[in-house]
Image 1 (cartoon, helix red, strand yellow):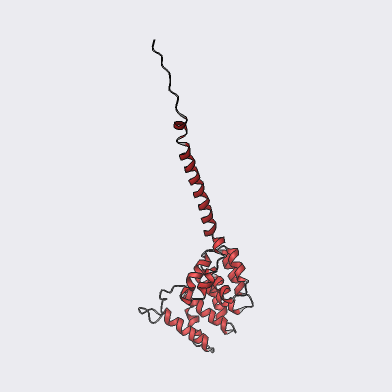
Image 2: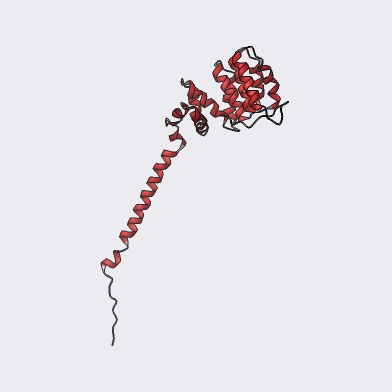
Length: 211
C-alpha cells in the first residue's frame, strides 16, 4: 500500500514575504508623515507668518503680487494687519480686502475705514471698494470728491480710475480743475488713462489692471 505524506514547508518559505510586506508598510507610513509635514508648511495659516509678502512690498514691481497673495489669507489675519503700525503693510492689507470679491465682511471693514479718522486709510479703503466693485463705492467716491482734505479727494480720483464707472466720470472732470495741484494732476492723469482712442469725447476706460 502506497502512503502519501505532505512535505512540510520550510520556515524560510513561510516567512519570505513578511519582510516585503513590512517594508511596504514602513514606506507608506513614511509617505503619510511626509505629506502631513508638507501640508502643515503649505497651509495659509503657516504661510501667513512668513516674511515674503513684506519683502515683496518693498519692491514696487512686486507689490501687486504681494497684495493678491495677502487677499487669499484668512480674514482674521488681514484684520490683524489693519491695526498694525507698519503703514506700507497696513495699506497693502486694505487693498487686499478689495480683492475679496463678494465678501461682505471685507466690505464692512472697508466702509468702517472710510468713516475713520485716518485719511490715508480712508483713501486706500475707497480704492479697495472700487476694486471690489461693491455699490457702496459710488457713495464713498462722491463724498470724498467733495471732502475738504485733498488726500480724500485724491483717493476719490484713484477710486474712479479703478472702478471704471462712467457715472463717476463727471466727478473726475471737476477734480481735474481742483485747487490742489496734486489732486488736479492725479485727476488729469486718470482721465488720460481712461480715454480710449475710439471714444475721445466721452471716453470709456482702457483696460487697467487693479492693484
